Image 1 (cartoon, rainbow over the protein chains, first blue to last red):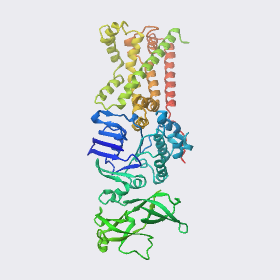
Image 2 (cartoon, each protein chain N blue to C red; image 1 turned 135 degrees about the horizontal axis):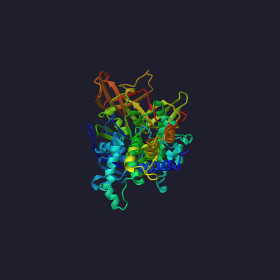
Image 3 (cartoon, helix red, strand yellow; image 1 turned 90 degrees about the horizontal axis):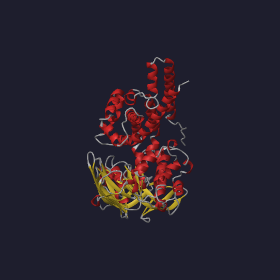
Image 4 (cartoon, rainbow over the protein chains, first blue to last red; image 1 turned 180 degrees about the vertical axis):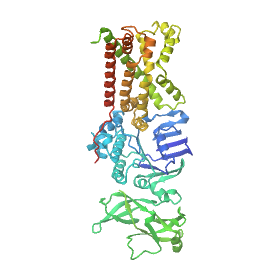
Length: 358
Length: 228
């Protein structure tokens, strides 16, 4: 458990958060720019002095009541920021060794070779930071942080400075990292697609406060939070690759033990593998009967669980429950009215696109 | 060929400049680091104090130093109390005066170099378990290296070139306080223009060599851009 109680006056608002985050998996701090998420991360690291208390798995890093403040360099954490901040006077190997040689040999749980392999840094070891691409620099920065065998990894928009291609190149590394090392990660982001991709737990922030927090699947299925708005809103589902159809290059993805089944493009994942799906609200339409003669192959039978206004007055958000699986659809209010949608009513949800995210 | 007296002046000048530069780096580094990082409201005051020798006529500095170090000045009384005697017209007095006079030439380049060390590099070092001292030596110093080269060269060269303060504090005692610039002045006073030429031309060559090596040492390192 990562506990943090932080109060810090900032320009325009006061940061005032109380967090109890899981000690496993990736927690995303998500919110608009300037909502205080970076400040929370810096305060966890001890780089910013907020009033309050910070504890990680029973180890107290800060407790103002007891007059305790552990300086950053004595906290077993890794910290990665947007701009890699590599040491320009050291080559990649020495950058990686910088933190490693400053921890006691007994505390080295993560082997440098493993980190180098995990992040594909082998060919870069002799290079100097100014000869690396943005994505490479970021990988070195992550490896450098991991080499200290941290008990907690803090990442502040590590992908924000990268273009879409570099981002896509780095995401798989981040995936592997949290699988391979089982290290709790607190990840600051304002990009919902990164959150949907990586996060297990989501903390939603605005103007220095926590609006809501919970497992990412639950949070993204809620209609009462601003994450439900915007073009990229949609649910995240955990699924298992059930069956492949080689003729059409499709795979069947079973959500919740097959209670909901969705077909998606085959991207080579082995049968039985756990994957994460993202279904955007804008890609879901609703009908009262199963559609025939439609190009949409994914139809799920469920019932309307909740309805809420979208940001734009023409639109409405509808959450459909398929067994235990939530799917959110964005419709025009006119369509919802024409369908006579009401809570509890059975409907068919047509899912146009399923994004498979490993 | 230079006379023995001239060689003595050259040696004395080199000793004075070398010792002054060494002391200035020792004193100037923490001072520059503090000036570069502090958010204290007293910063402009200290910065102004450090810069004072840049704008004051050397004779003004020399005059006040003479008063301070003299038998009735606080510094003079202190050195006498310590049993060190009086500083004016001694080599030690020259060193103390030179340190004060050349202070901005060392502190300012160091301060600029330290200000250019990115805060996030120091923070990254902190998150990689480096203590504040460790961060200073392993990150700030290497990144500020060009500043140290500039500071050393300017401190040394400026001390070699000083005249007003030297004359006020050191006087013109052969083998003890008669440095090059004073020796040159002597030659001119005595209308020994050949000798004066020898010293002056030597100084010109010295200044040229120093500046060229400074620019060579601080040339931005160009490495081939390699991007995959």
